[in-house]
Image (cartoon, rainbow, N blue to C red; front, side, top):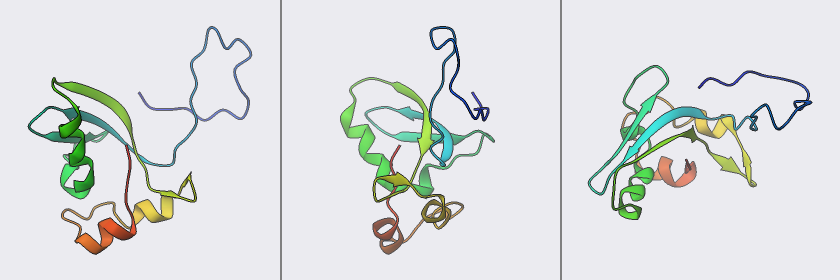
Length: 104
């Protein structure tokens, strides 16, 4: 689902769903005991760009499908500039993963 920007909260919050913009990369994430697969909204495989998310496979014992965003946080807030340093880097070196860690 692609978010739409609104400048005010919905009047009827019981009827509408809303969430904050995280400034991340949208991904459908398939997590099983054996692997983590991330697919971008453009249907591209992106798990290799975010190897630290592989830890998710250790936390489930059945297939889980998540719709979320890959984000980089700085000071507890999403930082798109930090995330950009990771985007499109197919196999990031350990130093980059350490300097710009991501979360789902």
